[in-house]
Length: 309
Image: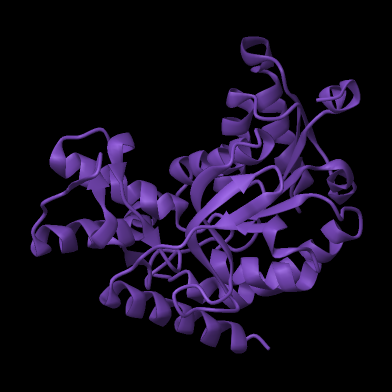
């Protein structure tokens, strides 16, 4: 590392200071992921209030410059996290949000790309796979630098529930949810394991665990109105992998081409993530049932994308 690159501040901009954006900002501040953290919201007073509240805690944490800004602050951003948009209401699916958020995103992406051509877009707004795809198309950026949060959170929920059932630390559970971040997501039971050993779960238990995984967001939204903590931790994990140039394997949403029979759509699959974004997409040897479900997930999203055109 040269002296100039060592001194160059890292900047993360969060657009949208609702429950997800605010909790993500707080998580990034606590973990000191970047030297600069900028909050942007259509309600500038809201962004200012969140900034002030966090700044007053800096004597306990230090290390991060936090301010409420605008789109011009995206110019020097390494990562721009988009959490803005209409939120999912009780009884509403992620796809129900599509048309509302697609129009919001058109303006957001245009304003970002006016001032930045080198950063990484990290999309968290739902339906995240479709909005990641349309953001890639609209931005003109390489797909490697337009990333959706994908099924990283779903996989974490999956691992947690398996670990809870087995009485094992979820960090020691190796299991994937792939496909849509939503109702058509696919559990890869054929590869799930603990330290290379089979999980030995009967089909009924597997179905219960998967249903709890798939419906987790609905349960949380019905109970408290929005998800925030776990998705913030997932976004923090992606930011850490990018800024730390880790080469970590994370189930993010990325553009697929001939992946288990799927092309020209964003879906969550295991990817190597580093300073350049998605460096590599890792193949998964799915069984026939999983492959067909994955292809059905892709077809569902492609139909929704076609409906926007």
